Length: 504
Ligand code: BG6
Image (cartoon, rainbow, N blue to C red):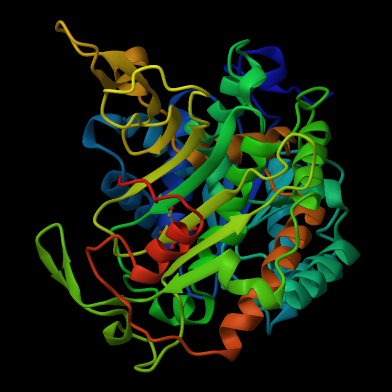
């Protein structure tokens, strides 16, 4: 049986069976930045099985020796110097191999298959395989098909495949990709990764709600006025202009990360912490979200694109000046949407989701704003702020409860104060990187923190009217300065709702 750490209240000392992880796209950025450092870190905590092996696969010709050297360098570069133990690193590197692969050359997949069989014999990996698709998304379907054609979709042990986002570009392409993947693998073998679900603070949403007696009774329309979920980034599109200009922030952040967070905040308590029990509830709440209708688009969605400006005192280019971005691009770098959930818990409680690039700082948070006190006794006081509970996901992870308190003195003056919990000071322990948790879970066969096909489908279905409407019309872009809090239209959108965006 699969062990589930949340269910058992403890996640340490779960060691997967010996296995091989094959990384397609091994010469790319994600492998260097995230995957191999996360695997190293797991090895250092003795969480990887003996015989664990990595096979890098990409088009770039390279020997296993070269691959090892590159990966060692990446670990040194992307982890803090104090974190790297050279003995552990050498040991990890000894289990790394490389094989060139090309989707136009089926022979290269046969060679991969032979290499994997050989490793089963020599390194005792017993046919347990984890394939990681870290390639451009256009290769997901051909890779799946080729793996199937050489019989690598099953083995004498377990076979699983992790697929990076974006899973589809729109509803039609998502459905097509899902069909192609499920022709070769069973749903239980497919792990659609969303790295936000691996973040400690995102998982803490479930703990806050369901391990405490005081919050859940308030978690409904009687007490909550609305919820704001924000993922603000200060960075621009960096060197990903080519991808981003085809995507935009709705696809890049909201369709996956923010909707995943939304489901954790809004779902009903699951009957257990089994993967499907949790994912059933997430899917159900997505099904309860009211479809966004074209004729009411302005009441549900607003967008923007950054102009030149300054962020953190540094000059920043406009989006249209970025490398590989069209000079008259209509792609949004700012988006906010309103979700209404048609069920008993949430009727008439809006959830506002916003995300953007080139805002003044990087902050991801969920802010639950409570209704005002029903009767105002302290009439002479300044207007009271509503109570709010903020779950800070990053940076400075923690939780803040805001409420009114009496200002010392003879008169009754109420001021807003905060009660604060900070991960850093309370636990004095660094949270593991999201990829560590997710890679380990995939090796253990625990798919709780991965997106199931039906949920991904519903999220695309929900956003399609907005994507279609935005594609058909051009806006007055750019409409916000880099380093500002977004376009005026977005503030007006909230004013029409009788509310305000939180200043972060
Ligand atoms: C990625 C997006 O999924 O998430 C990026 O493609 C974004 O555009 C990134 O910058 C944000 O992740 P994090 O973990 O830095 O908040």
